[in-house]
Length: 349
Image (cartoon, rainbow, N blue to C red; front, top):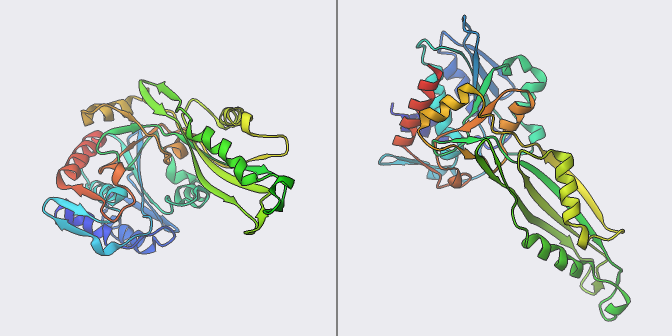
């Protein structure tokens, strides 16, 4: 079976978030054929480990789930695999399975983690579940996360903050609007401010992160004949690794100061911490060298931050173009899979 055919087999197994059981069972079954592996399943998370005499342990992780979509388009065309999840990230999972089952001697012990529910709220993540129930399975000196990076190393990740801003007005009849104050109209100044935001650029370890700020939801209105007295907008702020939650909140509060009044409210809804590049780690630097490509910043959030919180240096490295993720026309080529297998295999050796 070719690498593309092996990856297609994974793509054809429906594994939308919270429904990864069938794929977890498939992965578990494959891994249990490796006599050199210790395999454990925790819920829909599958972990395989080697045990020997090496002092260093490397962890390679990837998520089993995909976003919802149409699986019927999964197919091979020439040297390309198309289908939902091909890029994010079943092509990389397939290579992980191949390398996990390879009993060739390596210079490190390896832990392979296939986890559930990455594409939804972080509190549901299978990686968080493992950290709570079996933290021993995640012990490692360094980690690689197989998120799609087009075969380059994408270092660290930016944090993500969601904030609700509630603007208040005075309710009135639309026939007599002068007796009230329209809260929805007040959104104009706030949205204009956000739309004019100039991204902050931060360089860490010679890797450049570009912060972002976007309005992602708007709510308001009472009835067709009522001047609304409340309007709400949700903002998403992508935060570079040099800021923590406190400093990011302080900056955003200050940024909004000109359009916020004493009666208005800013509610911080959730926070996913960023992760520094970790390129001072010798093994991660070696991985960059094997790719032969310049290292880039991961501008989105990934579970590299989860490993960073546990004190494990980690980076993103996977097959497939991240710009194609989450579509039914995700595509990955045979050459991309071959190169990913080469680099990851050499790195582990």
